[in-house]
Image 1 (cartoon, helix red, strand yellow):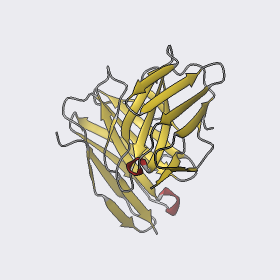
Image 2 (cartoon, each protein chain N blue to C red):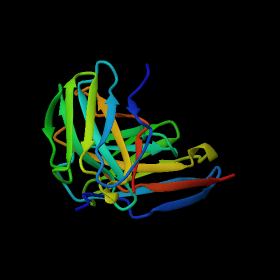
Image 3 (cartoon, rainbow over the protein chains, first blue to last red):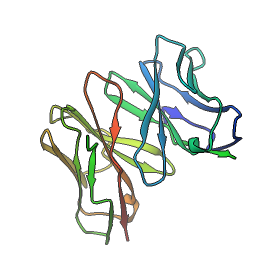
Image 4 (cartoon, rainbow over the protein chains, first blue to last red):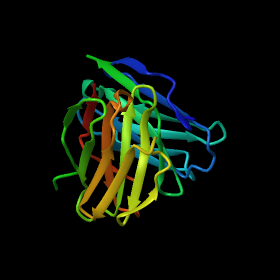
Length: 111
Length: 113
């Protein structure tokens, strides 16, 4: 059973605009959430994380928002660039070691 | 830093054959994870080790799958016998236990015909 869900398999955005990637989860015990970015033929690379005690974390063009009551998090990329085109995975952690990943959202940034 | 190293990068084998995937974690990292990526289920955690000890293997799909970590710098994931439904990309990741962030290897693309 998928405890972390990314319901949008793909997303297309114009360069310079905002990209919003969404993720839903079911387990209220998750204590950390992460976003990973994956290019073809490479392993996922860490992008940004957020603790369950926070509702926002920002790193440059990337901001993650956490809504615990809705069990929802989102990744905002502003402004989007063609190099951001990749698959983005949402992940959640419980007990510090059990990682659960979503199925990924493929982002295409159109020049 | 060489990052997490996985071998082989690609493996094509026939059903029924034994397959061994290899992983060298980043030096100094004390947790190691094996994942399988499929279109339907995304990244699934198969097993993880802390200080070379398997902690949770509940994600291992069947007894045909086994994993070992004989020392801090090497781990294997073995499938015997392999089946076509095992075809997927297998990733290894490592991290320091006091950090949440994992570092992934480039993956092994396994095709079982």
